[in-house]
Image (cartoon, rainbow, N blue to C red):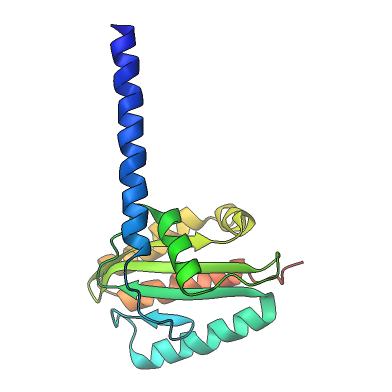
Length: 175
């Protein structure tokens, strides 16, 4: 009985690995739109004036801190459940990684984004940025501010508040 359970366990691991590898290949072969700047709002969740203000803000942010922060919205992002996988595909296809080993990049993915709601996740090139956000109360901010604004139908405002929280928390230049 134990041997059968162990065999079933290893078989499920193998099948899961094969499925993940296939999903990664599917994601890698997906045609991504070209990067248009710091704010790649393919779902048009930000009014044009807000998008332009964010574009300027994130450009200045990179110049001041050394961190590149990109916002990406899609009507549907098939890799939402494979966050690290999805991040690595965008980093690779958009050639975001720089030669410097201390380069930090942050990507805010907004999936299923529209004016009614979004599902988001952050991709990081350095774990220490994620740690700093956690120490600053990231999860509490999302629940108390972002989720509340989205529930009120203020999707653009929610995401701007989220971007502001991240840029303020990670405002120190990279050492």
